[in-house]
Amino acid sequence: MTVDSERHAVNRLISLERDEAMNGAEDCRAYVEHLQHEHGRLNQLLLEIGHEVAALGQVGQPEDSIAHFAQRLTDLRQQLQAHFAEEEAGGCLEEAVARCPSLSEDSKTIVAEHPLLDRMLEQLLAQTRNRAVSPADVQRDYRAFGDKLHAHEAAENRLLQMAFGAEATDYDVEGDD
Ligand SMILES: [Fe+2]
Ligand SMILES: [Fe+2]
Image (tube, rainbow, N blue to C red):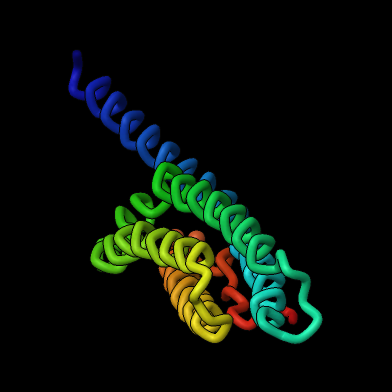
């Protein structure tokens, strides 16, 4: 191989790598948009269940309102598990860290929170099976869970925004209640 053809081959390799990195970033931008949409949808679900939780224990509530709440929580838990799995397998958190190595610790913290959030929901579900539990306790713990999830998703959005730029808009933590 002549020096010229060798240089040509190296340049081609560099440009191929650049294209690949570009595609990674482009794919992630689309993926970030999808995650933002999912965050909005999950937040809406959280708010809807929050209304049901607030009504627990009030006069005139149907007898099976706790059982209905448990069903809603089970559904929320399944949706969140799928969401977390998607985030962990999607490769964009890794891509974010590859682009901005200083985000490494934040990314680890975010992923480590997934099982903690799941456990909070599991405990809340266990509470609903305990007949002696008071609505006030359930309401307090559901609020604590909602606050933790909001903080988690907001941190995630901030990280994606730092790595991929303006495409990642701020997560509306209050929702449009
Ligand atoms: Fe997450
Ligand atoms: Fe998320």
